[in-house]
Image (tube, rainbow, N blue to C red; front, top):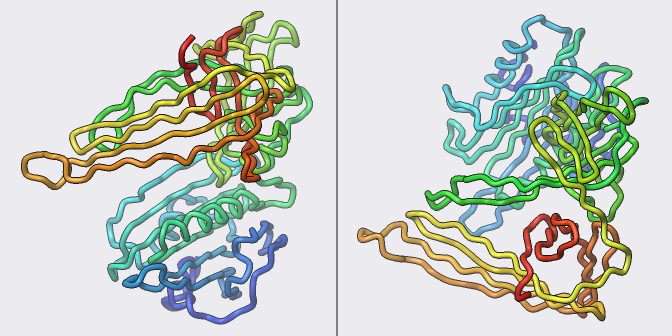
Length: 423
């Protein structure tokens, strides 16, 4: 990439943060040979057409009395001819942001390919600039056989509640990025020959994980795969039951699959799984077999889980208990959900915490608890969905299934394990 002074080239520089321009519109944008969708998030941002691409920027007012104004900068560079040295060119693009301290290592560095088969690199960096400002930067590089493409998002002095929606908008923009004419971007589209399975399959996955308190947590989670016959699958149950709509909104939880070896005698499953909102995917092929009770993929056995009938009624109380502890403190709590045969529910819970950090003798220096307001109202069940309509007029849809066939002792509600109390 060519450079045009300190603000030119791949980096374009922070001087452009204060440049005037036209507001961006949520529509398809064409830049050279590439196309992308500009998410609504970036409507109203200042737009500037620079020699090396497009720049969008916005200033944010402080949210705290002693805070400083924040800013965000989005850069989409014009496509460049393939250099044959994509990794080197990407590294140069990252270094062109002079605000990154020399030698700063990326917080995240991932590589892979897109659904369209192009190479993609993703790097995330934080947390201070050379001027001491709080910073977060995401760099994206995409390489086709004939061109190279680079995008960047930089945020300065932004609070998490400001930064997260911007990052999600950037992911959506990159996911929609199409470097070549026939590209589709991050759109999962099964092809002829894909599919063949239908329904939910689950297995219990146990593991030890380090927690924020310096300890280890033992977890027992339900690893789920929901297939449709057309070739889509998801690892998270759609709240409204529409898998196609769910995979458009949450592509990082979805993928496509194909059974190989014959319709009834398939012995292999090939999957394309979306790794993140930027559009990185992995392609895999594993041994496959199925029985009346479920199926086996690779070395993992999944049990088939039937959906609940529409209007199904429960009678009992189920509780979800969670906790983490270590040398620096602990947190724990319980959420309970009572369901009655006449279609009513009561939901409540609480959380307690303590911290032992900062004291010479290791004693507790901070402790507290909070209770969740009691909610009650009516519930409905349909397939893998539980809908709670409370007396205040609020409605909440949660995924629902019972992993143990013929038993409701354990219900998985909204992805959390709820154990039945009493009998």
